[in-house]
Length: 435
Image (cartoon, rainbow, N blue to C red; front, top):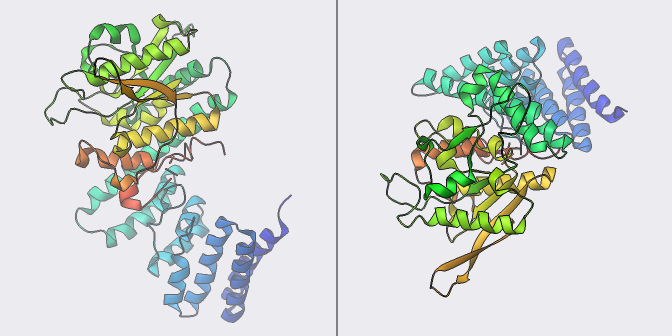
């Protein structure tokens, strides 16, 4: 049943418009302020933002522009600009133009990490987007058109991400069942096959057979022809797919910028992965070794064109049954590792289909070498994302930011956080949570 207080708050905002039209600005301000008070009583962030706009509007009409801007620029959880772009209409476009003309903020970010511009893209609202485009042209510095093009690309990426997860993967995760991972792979492959734009943005799901990985003797590169891609067969058979896919989260330990592998000369990470899989198979004897696949970035992301694979990383991780993290003293300080651990934790807690193991140090063996053991995954002491490190800082930091504004997507998906450095702390990982 609709909350009567909510409708009273909405009615008072409409009443303030009537009083404004009649020129009775004192009663307009009183009605709008009463609406704002009721919105706070309801603790309704949507109505609070909208009521701030309407109260600010009555102040603007009263010649009190500085006070009006305080309400136009309110940005706790939701801002007036976000609300106006979430719900496209000619009326809201008019209000948005008033807000812009008064100097209001049109680059605020909501609790999910989305901007007013994002919502115009999500809604396909070309008219409102053009209003924002013209406003941004007046305030941006440098190569304005390039910056606008980058915003458009980022928003298109976010829109495609939302659609892929919410429309294709999340329903399968909620439905569950013994074939949940086969269903996830099939739905994701079909979604990309049927949409050329999404196919350009996001890479398909790939894996390496464990038997091939074991025979190869080192970490395979994407060009070593060991990767297999999920392709939906006409007969709907999944016999070509592994029974189980393990996603490896690990640190690139080769510090040579010109190195041809993320591993060191002793193939330390490769041997750790083998040891982890062998222990996993001992713990899970029901898993068929010959039907076991693995996902690891160096093999499954095209190293010569990495962006589609990097952007698809959370979607591909969601299609893996198990995540194994190779923990060492520096693991928590690496940005990619932090994102992958949070994704693994959130998926496991939200849908209860995935498992997460950590391979942790377990003392020194008789031969003097470090030994390891598997344990259940758990979030360790968090390092702030701004303090984490990347091997290729300039190239990868923007991608991490997209994925983390994919820690709100952080992002609705998990609620992933998409753009920390540009927009502040945003939540990719809300998107994966049940909501």
